[in-house]
Length: 431
Ligand code: ATP
Image (tube, rainbow, N blue to C red; front, side, top):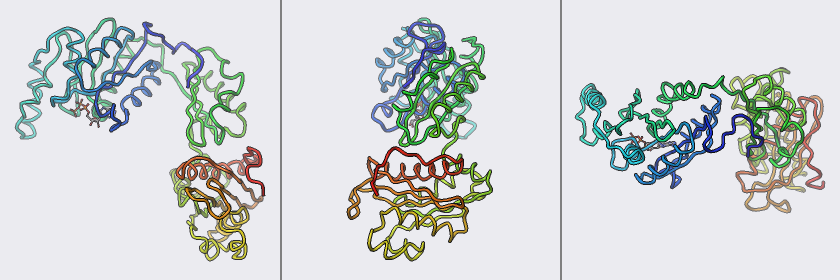
């Protein structure tokens, strides 16, 4: 979701509008995710030319021609990816020729280049490969340093159309070397956009997006929201770096303790930095998260300075034998219990000689554990300045519950380290 129309918003038929056309049956049937659109979208946005629309079509001449005609009627620049290879299902050049109503002509220079490419590798050139030397009349060639299929550029209606191969490594190198610089200089933009990303833990997108004032504060600033389980990213984009920084800071202040970065840092990286600044370490005892918390705490480079180690104490008896959780407590309450979580945290802290102990226990599902329903989660922290506990009733499938538990654990420690109270959505589990 994106709010607020700044100068980067371009309606149909406006100057500076960029559209993408991605070609490939594999994209339509879900075999391949459209990484090319994501990569181009990011690069163009950073260059101050955010993509206005992405259209995906299959390997079909008529569909490609129709998509190109529609996009070139609206946009100033159209970037096409895919369907430039040698096989019979690669028909993007035919689609471009059909849209422009021009013939395909064999380009002698490209043909010679293809022959050289095969000769240099001592390979015989399959006849099909020469299709790649067919260029719609009026188009020029964009060199491909990484493969055999050259790209194309051609004026169509009022737009400049760039056609690049689908193979990501080829597409990105050609875009970086030739196409993006050309697009930017053609557009004559004053300078690239800058962006800052405020990340917010454990608040839903509607809660974050409904926070007040700052959204419309500055001219030319765009705010976008991206929600993931347990986290919302608030992206602030604009051309004026000082205004972007000011709005991001304002957003972080208004969003309160849930906002943990203005620089797009991950939650684990923030925890690592906070621990490192304090010369502190952490050790983890994990039940339902099965090592995911340890993986998160070792994701940041240099985490050996802050992460002591972890124990995946999955079986109930291991919580007693290896972490010192009271056997009578385990027998009476079972493994999913707030005091079990607390004792796991203090047990691992002591055994691993860490400044802080962090523990998770709960029911990831799909079956309940004793009286405890699926989604019941207890996360505990034990440290030199005290202890903290989060008791949650999480929703979703097993994977989501485990991931959310990791975020709850990381956030519990983060808040403690910066002297904030633990996240409190109200009493979810009466104890
Ligand atoms: P080739 O010379 O390999 O035939 P091409 O230009 O014809 O190149 P495609 O055949 O469309 O490209 O795609 C080649 C490979 O690139 C595909 O198998 C796919 O994995 C990948 N690919 C194509 N389009 C995309 C895309 N939009 N995003 C990510 N990957 C893509």
